[in-house]
Length: 279
Image 1 (tube, rainbow, N blue to C red):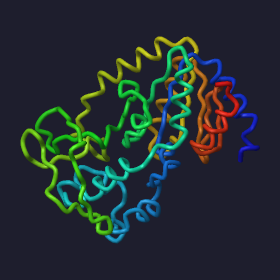
Image 2: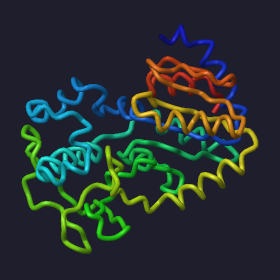
Image 3: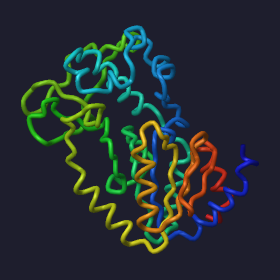
């Protein structure tokens, strides 16, 4: 695989070396190399949550606001397990590589990610550098919601029956109305997601891309099943006439003329590129 991508890696290394700022866009594939589960398809999802498979529930059935109305202990069993998993998992070396590259760029970097795990922040990226377009599991909101505000999940200690995918203790409640709360994550068919950070994120993103004169877009692990990140990467590359680097083991193709695809996983590709860069 590395030999097949050798010329592409060299071309990408030249692009990265010339860039004065990095727009890093990341999907679920960025987290897989840290050991996080891949929910692509029912088999991977049910392997991680067999009790949901026994009930015939798909990922979109539990990652849905209606799950909290239907069976809140099950819904919180799923999200509580994920919260603890993300807390316990260390970001892979690729995060540190990206952070080090950014330190050598005049305008640093900005991160746009659909991941809700908070691993960019765990790896040392400043919160104001990270646009979490689908929200974060580390923030909570009211299910209703009673108001447009969120609060930290740091004080939440999940007590889970992982086998049964059940929350065992008192259900998390809204700080303001004491009704059921939920993670501040954009779910399927979700009209109640509280997106309090959009204006701040949009302003930070605009300031970053506006400061760059030779920006490079480096997209990592963003597939076509949930294509938010891919569309964003392509749009930004076109608007700002920036080269697009797409790292994905299966879906690395791109129709943009100034683009380079690397058919590798996130960590392996970043490590290979790091060996080619003089920093």
